[in-house]
Image 1: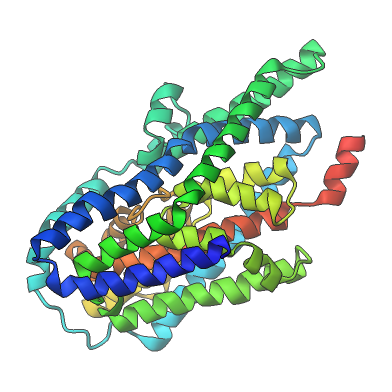
Image 2: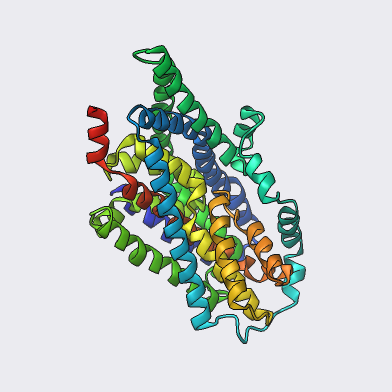
Length: 425
């Protein structure tokens, strides 16, 4: 059986068996099976992937920038990446806000105040994270790390941009040193290439347990929350999922067909393994190693370009998250009867695009940013509690679009003919 079929089987089996076990979650032996088997297996798989994110991001970006700079391509690739990211993010937010305004899922929604008590701790944590957020100027300055090692240590806790900046700068510095000294090759590049290749080998090992890990992760979620996690707030969830599907199969398909001159259906078919991993893990960062492997082996993208675009995109290209943030803010505005003006909705669009670029690529990373946007337009912050019950499921869905979007942007930026001509020159 092919690996993606095993993954799909593990996903479906996890939902079914976890949901069947949910009514009996008080049984001692079931709790122990979940605690000592399901959770550890899922965490081992995720930790294997997270373990190589930092070395892979650093080595991939340094190698990518060095290679691109050597062929006078880094500026063009970076500008095209930024352009397509803004276009895709803007389209996703406008789709989400358009659907909310059309279907109005929040109108007539009865607020159950008891939910605030059951989710009080989570709301307070998210609120504290939102309040401790940095100003735009401070965040801009702190992209440049004072201590690269500290940035690497905290990369999975929101400091990924600092690590990326460090890698980008080192890659360009290596190029300038190589050019100034007229060296034929730098030994550090060979070492980084070996680190990158070793990271891919670790991915291969992790992928051997992936179907079982996916089953365990999904089983644990369904066991704890039951089918309610997939059923509650149905109309809100339906609008989010509809927006994600439109972005995937209309916007992305259009860009692939018109700009990249690729068959969208073949592209999505070749990317299905990565999308299944994204759905299961809810983490763009955890999927990065597999995304790079698929981009180079199945999609045939230029390694220097795909490594650069995908590593940057894991943090900076969160189309699904931007769409989700826009839908959530307007939905909660409808729930609480906050009538947002056109100007305020434009403000929400802009803030969601910016927030989508800076969202941490980890599960639940968008929630503090949603609260910041809510505060900006006068929506009660405690309203975030209403969507916590379905956030895990929607996080799985939007992460799938985020990861798929990274591959699409890489395909749009990739220009083999131009790259080959620069190499020859």
